[in-house]
Length: 409
Ligand code: SF4
Ligand code: SF4
Image (cartoon, rainbow, N blue to C red; front, top):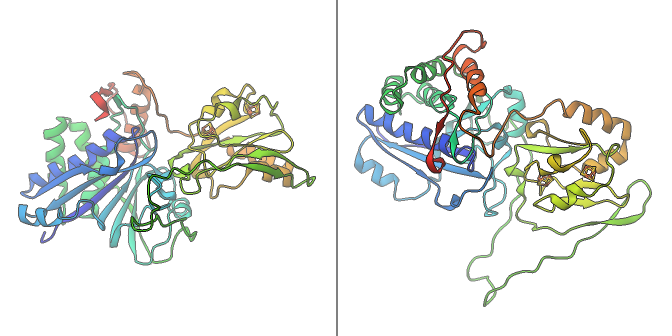
């Protein structure tokens, strides 16, 4: 190895914080096993982390201290050799703090770089989400349900070491499998985790992605004013007034659509979205009142339409809705746009009913939020089966490997 390598791990804030740290730290420990050096760090601007908001960890691996120092002259890598996306819905693009707009998941990848995604989806489904790039790169899938946990508990389902094994296969000049295995044994003292890394190494599924393949949408962007363009003094813009909506069926003007921050679209935070059955809605107002992001437009016919550009997918509306299956959270990967559900329903009510019936079959596998020690036991067995046997048939260790993790890190 005659240069430094940069790896970014893109993850969901809080829910995947410990997972991301395990991966970036594991890379550096493995590098040390073969006489290299490295550093692992989180992106400065992601702190304080918030639930689900896309965040990043980095690992820089170098042949010697001098090369490492040279790479660190820039705090955050502008180009990377490997991007790891530990949740497949991050493939739609990431937006952290309304800095630049939506950033494609493959944006920082060097030509020929590797994009590693944890997913149960196929390549074609991922290409519906991943934006096109004008240089070729390689896309690899680590089979598994994206691993989510809480702030205080880490779900040790081997996703961390399976990604390390995959990277060893994709970028052998940076890390060998032997080094990864030695680091796992030293860090976790767990032969089963080492076996998981080896199996992932052997079973890498990848394709070379030619330029232009993928989601052709232009990600939204904006330019923040430079310091010379800012007005004097402190200016806090007030919230603009909202306005009424036209009913496309009757032409009536009514209801209310609140104004929102045009720059901070929270949809890249979302791993699931609410699907509303307007035929069963009793107009109780609870979803509108309880939504923490004021996402609901009040429609002229008295219904409540969740604005998908603003929805962060928290699931509160599903939790408060008193009607069975009237609001159902559905896996975000099932959608390719942020279109208004109410407008779809207005245009074709029978077609919308069939659409709802199909979508609600895809309730998300992800689980996050507050979890008690031991609650992940069943999920870990299932995940280990996918990871180790692929078919899930071979019996693997059945112990609860859930561990408490102070501070989620
Ligand atoms: S999931 Fe529901 S409650 Fe949560 S932000 Fe979206 S619309 Fe609002
Ligand atoms: S909570 Fe459910 S029933 Fe009540 S207004 Fe919202 S969607 Fe309709």
